Amino acid sequence: MTIALIDIGSNLTHDSFTLDRDAVMERALAAGVRRQIVTGADLAGSQQAAELAAAHRGVLSSTAGVHPHHAQSVDASLGERLALLLQRPEVVAVGECGLDYFRNFSPPDAQRAAFVAQLRIAAAVRKPVFLHQRDAHEDFVAILGEFRDALVGGVAHCFTGGRLELDDYLKLGLYIGVTGWVNDERRGQSLREAVPHIPADRLMLETDAPYLLPRDLAPAPKSRRNEPCYLPHIAGAVAQLRGESLEALAATSTANAVRFFRLS
Ligand SMILES: [Zn+2]
Image (cartoon, rainbow, N blue to C red):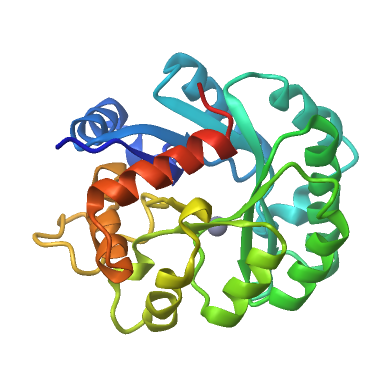
């Protein structure tokens, strides 16, 4: 039985893919990853992601937004520039956006301002949000709570939390994006405990390539670069933890992504 997966978090515009992006895309398709949502993390990257997606309709879509690391770079032109990108049919979500107090590359107040600005835009253009959160759970939940009724949807991308965070996110109506973090038996312990409790209609899968190479991949590529073609490996781990077949997980997670991002 062939599976059809959607990688909802692929940083395909990353420099590490410059030399062989076409081969990376072909390997993904051959592995059953029928579509990738290319993450935009700043305005220039979001523009690049949109152009890449436009050149590969039906195989790539993209997001447009500003990662909390880059919140400081946000100025008054953000709304106008994002709105232009979000008019494009291949740009299916706002983000990634959110809060990251682990690194604080941008000051927390700048992060909150950029996050709120992007949630307003998402509500206005009626597109879902692709969310990033690290060490900022309380502020993140409080801000999202205020926008809950205005947003058409949100996904907690690269969810690494445990049961308590999961419950807070589910109450907010969020979808949950699971990466190869789940393949790490030590670091991913609390996530592995939470995965069986994600409702089937809220679960989506992602590689976050080139980051987060699944730790148990054998043989591991010498480059240590993660690729969308490893998504079935991640799906296998998630299916096992949930006690379901890979085929069943592929069917539900793909249907969720099609519905969430309104893919055709
Ligand atoms: Zn992220």
